[in-house]
Image (cartoon, rainbow, N blue to C red):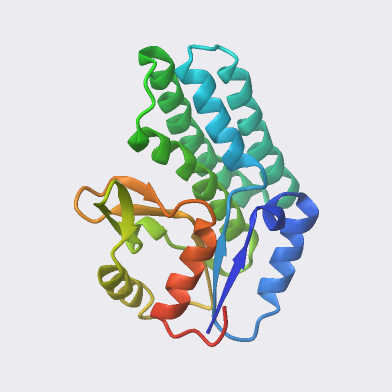
Length: 217
């Protein structure tokens, strides 16, 4: 079994995401594919939240560009009309959730660490759903179900023992291809969205590879 991690550049354009598809589909053994947000999206999510908390209405324009970016990617790479329609439904539900969060930040002029973590999580949640639909035969798993953190010393730290246990349980039967969002996690007590910090998708991939004793990462 292999764990393959693809960063933002690898899912940043139509050409690169189609290259990702080819690489994964050519594998002869089960693979777990960990993906980052589309290139530049994490920074844009953060910048948009900063506009919203200042009460700057231009956050709406920035948010609309995030919507357009994901719609354009789906329309460009998913050729099957039924699958495209289904995926756009999933993408639009996520984007409407995100729109509501931004609007709340704009209204109350407050951006807590909890809200910030929730906002940036949408990048990987969106990209991983796109990739899972694009790759033939791929399934999707939510990394928040098995990557668990605990709040200690003023930050969220991985609970390695619990995470390793949950990863092994989640992948007890490994499909041929599984796509998971990198970077994001959840608090082991509250279930609230957390994240593994900058470079977090690399961390996600290494956590999974170590827990499952992967042949290669």
